[in-house]
Image 1 (spheres, rainbow, N blue to C red):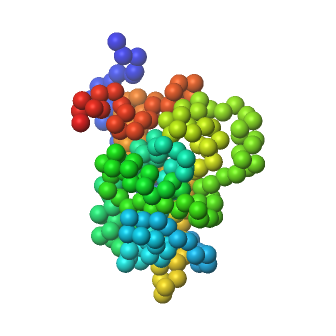
Image 2 (cartoon, rainbow, N blue to C red):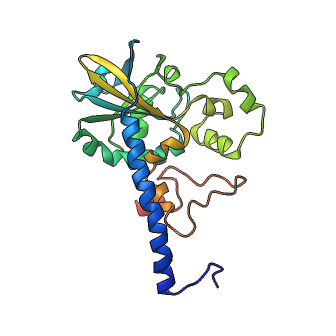
Length: 249
């Protein structure tokens, strides 16, 4: 028998009405934060970056593809890895379907990784994605936008107790702990105005949960995210690696 509190329909509805007040307050606060996010000062991009794409080499300005706004997801995929980060990959399943809607609102979306373009294209085909993906291999782009770290910077972390999730994900990518944490995820947003590119926003860590649409859904089921036990292996897998994924496909 369940150990959760059981109540009547009337008790549930009364508690739900109280909770709804808090949910509405979060929505209003989120709208206010979004307004402040849009009011952040822009930073002109002075450095020239060149990316490898399926349409040849492109500059950062050319990645806008004729639109005035650009969202870049820094997808963790190191040059020597044999597969992309499984957590980043879980996000790919969410935003892949958003690209057409973003395009309709004058926003170009692309992923950027340091792995060579051939690896990115092969992995994208495996995952069944269609979003644009550019390689920043050999450039300073990842370093400049705070998604590439040196061994010296990582030494305090590497000399501590490394979470099992790191080792697990590193193995799933075909690299070691250092190789995995050297790369980082992030979201960078740019504007193109009068021929100049500006950085308008960036976010990292839990700010990236917006890229993983399944998390808000899990927040609404009885067990929630069920991630409290740090000793357990992390549950996220690439969508073709879950038990029974092949049979469902």
